[in-house]
Structures are given as structure tokens and as C-alpha cells.
Length: 371
Image (cartoon, rainbow, N blue to C red; front, side):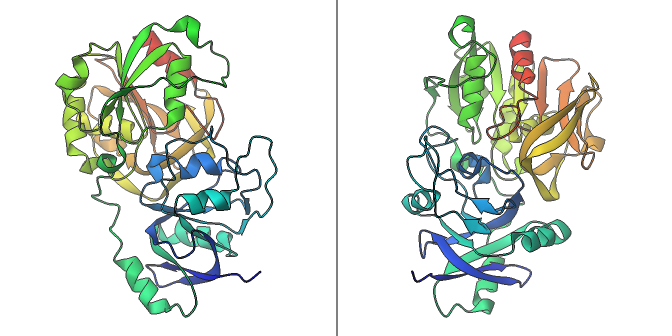
């Protein structure tokens, strides 16, 4: 079988040659990042937090268990492209409905394989996440590809939550066909308003399993619109882009604080921090994987967590009424906060996992307890 050549060009001038995967010839550009999870590639590429990013998978063998219709985190592939050492040509899983290659083709997403992903990750760790382009075909000109990479919009100052959010509010009604440790129907007691900055479906599944009926609102919804239904609590979701650029969301959360219990995850955590006057900054290469150690400063326990973010909250900027509750043990960045004078807390990681460990699922129960 004839293989189509491909190239990955980075803004620092590096061009890596490999072979085309996914939709041959599809446009592919974005911020090049890496994820260290060994499984969960389907959940990762459908997570809206990856909008505008090309994901390098550090695990060398991707696609071996295929793709199914249940394990998606949104209705499409959100990542701009993927970089893998080897895309499996064989699919072996009883739940699989198609291969990862077919899934990429169906969503018109391009990628590259046959490259040294270890080298790419070392470069990203030393130089930081950077803009890139993946191109397929013969006679590719390296200098032109590098120049194209340098024209890709920078993630700083980019409001992508407005791009991935729902167009209109809706009730989450999908049945939970798998669960871990919590009964679904018997605990239906609370109405939660979830603000969609790029929400993962498993967040709504976990809220549902902890006894919550979830109504999802667009990122552009006003505080008045959200409070009109008199929810028992408000959830701030994950999402892509620069949190400081989502000005409308920051203002809305300012107006919601103190009205109802609030729980935030990832971008929601950053927006809550910005709403109380703290600052955020861009990490060198971000945190993306399923084995990040976090210490709960309240209990002293260590949690192994799933993470996906490129920005963090500046701990030095936290006001007096905000307490840091969790810390990332890899680099001592802020991994969780709570307001001491209001029922509001947030974490920088993903307690709903998918993929990842379930160590932090207790946070959903904590939210329910506040409601």
C-alpha cells in the first residue's frame, strides 16, 4: 500500500517528516500540546477543551481498541489534529464500531504518524507549547510550512469558549449506562444550572449520578437568565482558550457569586478566580494526562488526577477571602480554591476523569452537600 508523506512544522523552524493519517489533505493547524495518558484517546480528542490544539500522544500505540459511540465527550472531534508514533491498523474491542482512522476521516481531521513523539515532547517541555501545521502530500516546502505555523493565532487572548458553547439552553437527559459507586435515580433531588464553556459529557453524567437534574446554559447566558429557573446550584464547566479573554463569563460569575452554591472545573476554576479579582497566566507546556498528583491541603490526602489545561491561577494574586485547597505536586501550581465567605469552590483538574482515575469524584458529593 502506498503511503502519503506528511510533515509537522513548528513555529521554531523544526519540520518532522512522517506519514499521513486521518483525512488526507485536510487543513490542520493549532497549538501543539502533548497528553501522557495511556488510554482514552477518543475522550481526549472529543473534549472541547482541545479546540484549537493539535494533540501529541506520548503513548506510542494509539487506536488499537477502536472507537465507539458511547465514549465521546461531545458530538464531534474537537482537536485540530493528532500526532502519534503509530496508528494501529488493527482494532480489537467488542464495543468498537469503527477504527480511529475511520473516525478521523469522518470528522475531516488530519494527523501524522511515524514520528518520534518522545523527541517532540522533549522539545515542547524545554521550549513550551507552540504553534504548528500538519500537511499531507508530495513536494512539501519546509520553509512555507514553518511560515504558516507562525501565522496561527496565539492561544493568549483567545476566547474559544464562545466557539464551542451550546447555541441554546437544554436539559441533559442522556441515561447513564455505566456508573461507579453512586445510584442514579434514587437521589434525584437537585436542579443544577451548568454553564457550558466547553462542557464534557461525563461531567453531566457524574452530576446526574450524584442526584442532580442538569440544565445546560450557553457561555453567553446572563446571571439573570441562569437564576430565572431558581437552580439549587451552579456549575462552571471546563473549556478551551485563555480564561482572561472570556470577559462576559467573568462578569456573569461575579453576579452569581453568593446567590447559589457554585462548583467550577478547569476553565470554570480559572473564571471563578478571575471573578474574585485573582489573575491567571499561561503555563509553559500545560498539564495534560491522567496521572497528575494533587494534594488536598484540607485533608492532607493525595489524589491522582486527570488534567487538561494550559493556563493556571496565580496564587500570589488570590484575595483574602479565597483559600487554596489543592496544589499540583509536580510544579506547585494552584489546583483548587474555595471562597471562605461564600459557598463556592473550584478545582483545576477533572474529577469526572474520562479518561483517568476516580480519586476526586468526592467533589461532586461536596457540591451536593453545599446545595
